[in-house]
Image (cartoon, rainbow, N blue to C red):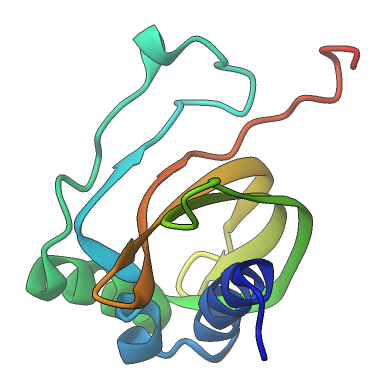
Length: 147
């Protein structure tokens, strides 16, 4: 029997697999209908006062179009993800996963690299017996913050 932590690991792994295989349907299956993605302008912009909402609330048609455009115009060089921590609420209806991401895309036309590199906190909610990502922070670099 899977634990709640195992279930969160599965959804993180499913998202990773979706990016790696460029499977839009699999990727969209991860998101809650109320998903919101806040993005820092750089990996060093730790103050949320500087962050953006580039994609708006989850809209399957709009997000599908954006992801398909990315997949059609970029080659995936590598996609490495490492789960550092999973925490499930005492009520077992909410969870976070702290994930280090190293994903490199290369523009097919211009050869320019687009590197997703940093740490994210992915937030999940249990909805109708299924885990869905409801939010996650954009990628940040914490290496110089001294832990």
